[in-house]
Amino acid sequence: MNFLKILLVDDEEQVRKIIAKKIMWEKLGYELIGNVSNGREALELIEVNEPDVVLTDIRMPFMDGLELASRLKEEYPDIKVIIFSGFDEFEYAKQALKYNVIEYILKPVNIEEMTEILRKVRQSIVDDILKKRNIEKLREAYMKGLPVIKERFLTDLIHGKLKSRAEIQQKMSLYQIPLAFQEGYLVATLMLTDKKIDRTNAIEGIDQEEMQYFSVKQYLEEMLQNQYDNIFLRTTSGWSVILGIRKGERGRKVVMLLNNFCRSCKKLLDIEITAGVGSVVNDIMEIEASYQESKEALGYYRIMGKGKAIYIQDVEPGQNESLLSEEKLEDQLMVSIKFGSEEKVCQCIDEIVDRAEGKKIHDNQVMIYYISLVINLMKFAEKCDVHTGDGEEISRDYIEQIFQIKSADRMKEWMKEICLNIQKEIGREREDATLKLINQAKAFIEMHYQEPSLSVEMICQELHISPAYFSTIFKKEVGESYVSYLTDLRLKKALELLKDTTDKTYVIAEKVGYSEPNYFSYVFKKKFGVAPSKYYKR
Image (cartoon, rainbow, N blue to C red; front, top):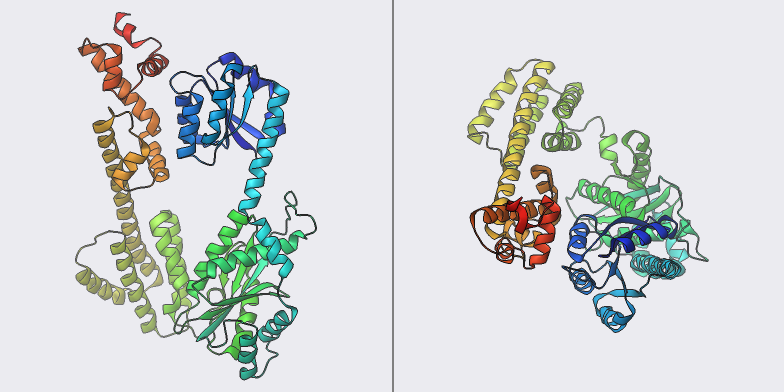
């Protein structure tokens, strides 16, 4: 498991230095991300780094350890808090238990005792993580397994060994397999393409490869729940899943779902899965064909890449397939226009035109495909709020131009011009939207900076965006974090008041959003090197 991040908070600099130096952080499995002198500074650092553990004193200026623990319980409930305090504060420390404080240490700090507590806290966190991964639930699923007779039936089904439709449907009902009377079927085969086994969290008596099987099975069944009736089984090629498909539905939706599944397996389970997806078949007797195609699709993983879903219709579209089925290339083009570079857009256009010109079909069909592509581009632009003028008139002009173009090279140039213009407009819209959002945030901060309770959450509620997204774009566009920006603004306003008024320091502190004059003086001196009362007397 990776290092746990820990933050040290104590107003005594010497104590912080001793603890930071004496504790063998890395050996205990921790990364010390910083040490600060009070709860206020701690919260600012926690907003950026979100540690796993906070080690704090009780008695500190501006914000003490109990208030810090209370704030953490409300805003960051997963962070574990350890408090250390003087002997005469023992009863006081016990009250901290209601604030998620899991350990307390008496001063003077005993390094051996603290080391043992840190070791115990880490083990507690690791145990919590294991519980959240439903280890016991997986153990139970593993011990029960699938009945051997049910597994054998499904294996015979996908290998085409069952010749009676009535028998298949009867046994599916008997074994409670919800696929007996579906309108269509599709088989996907999963392959573990990264065979590295992590044995650090091994469970005694359980083979880790078997645990991987049950982890993947359970996670896929959860993703498919309420979307597709399905059954999961082992095969000689890996693991396969048979899905019931609704009438008229194509396999593309399943491919997108399995793509997300493969990505999530890597992120959440640390297991790299590649999926081969067969075509949709309409008859239960044709399931073997979809299964064979799913295996063939897997064979392209060295070309298409691992950790994703590979659709047989993408890699083996068939010689008689219409150009109107070139969905994958069009999807790549739309993604490149929206998020990629000019070079990537041009590459997609080159590939689309080369593929179209290379088909052994009538020229009129190629022209119809280009018309369809341009119409889709216009719809895409409209969806992205890019207005290209009168859509109907533009479409007519484009159709006329398409039939006037006589070479593949000219078609590429013409298509690239359309796509790059849309890309530029999307970029301009995105920049304008971001700038507008930042300006709205700045205006809100300017209006409310005098309120001590002003926070990221208040701003995001006003702008209807998430705190994570706001923090990212604010720092990127402004060049500093929200906390730094707000602090600089309040101090700037404080300087103006110091210059133009005779107000006392505590009055100025209140006017610029600091409810505690001492903390205002502390921040001011940290920024300018002198107390506010002496700033204009230098």
